[in-house]
Length: 206
Image 1: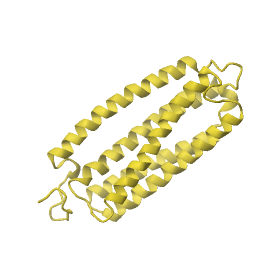
Image 2: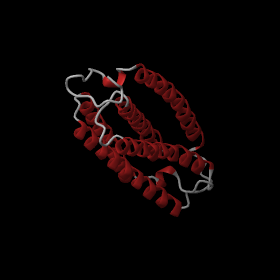
Image 3: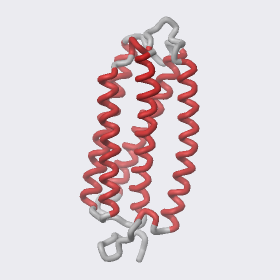
């Protein structure tokens, strides 16, 4: 059977995402990529923690952060992680329409998260907290904005996957791509949980 051939219930492997050597290699490469990303985010977190009190007489974290907005954004992103899990379950059961539907919901939730983040940044800028206003501003926008860039990249990734494979069903070629996207999305969500805790919750308690 050709790897790009649409799978059916008769020839559907137990783990289609790892049924080929190419699929296994993609997993290995992806874990190496995540290792690098983890080190990068750890560096940004360390920089933020070192500079978060250097606000140069600008608004402090207690004055600046609005937890209801951030909490709503957090709920949207965590829910999107759950919908991506449902999409992977559909992948493993060869239910193409269900997979596409759950990933589409994941995409919508990711876009809503980005919309809230843009709204939040706009509010902060109007309160005098810009990228160049202080060391705290630079560290904050670099860390949170870098995460937002990862969410935007994930949205583009799933759009490309859905459009490219809309009528192809599940194959041994696209199954690893769907699965790795879901892993990437979980990683982005885990990083956000740390941002919510370290930046926003710790910022409100001083």
